[in-house]
Image 1 (cartoon, one colour):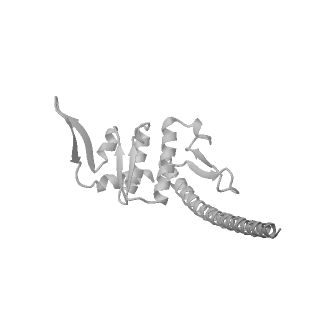
Image 2: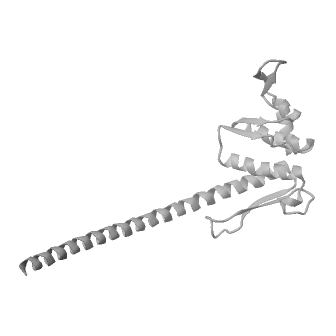
Image 3: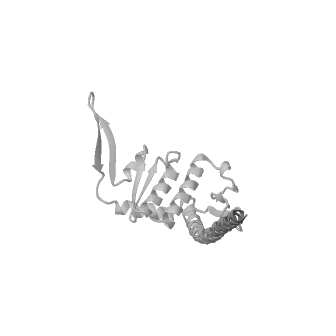
Length: 212
């Protein structure tokens, strides 16, 4: 009987110890979850603040640059759900001069390209970088729109280096330096470069003046 009582006591103590460890583990899990939720809320608040600030800046730049690319036109960015910044989308309104349209699908290919470029450069201006790489972004532009695009590029060339992959002759003519790949008959390919010349101050001033 004594041995049975001692065994019951040991079992009781073991159960109490196990229960205490389980409670301790549970409390630690609850504390960790609470702390994690606190961190998530803090991150969400910071994301909202950063996004709201960045969007406001990009939206302002987009409106300004759209008017440069489409003189007399109107471009605007808006949020689809301003009250829910973590899940909102962005609407782009583009109305070139003389056109009463709001949907991008109703614009020509060149106009859609210029609108996209206005948005791209609006982001560039809001978050400057030492250099930008663009791959045939002006391929769909006619001469008039290409002229405006090159004027926009000219505004950025003093602040950053722009590397543009292009087959457009006028884009190449506006470059400071050209790079290409050449392959001699029966030989291997090699990269060649050519400095176009000195700065074209007079040409740039004329290009910018024509956009105003």
